[in-house]
Image (cartoon, one colour):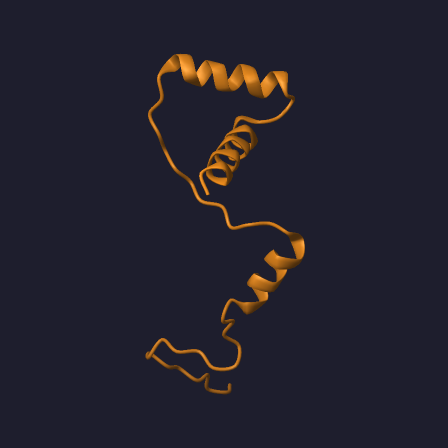
Length: 76
């Protein structure tokens, strides 16, 4: 049986991906990296967001993204 190479330094050689492939795929697909935030809202705002999302046939997430994008575009 052939001996396998064992290295405890934690470095990888040619097979290591520096993330450029992921960046290229993200650029091509037009998507952005996503992150999670948790906020406390009054219940009335939560229900208003849900109702508005239903009325627009979208998700609360997409509605919030649109609201925040609009807010920050206007503040520039």
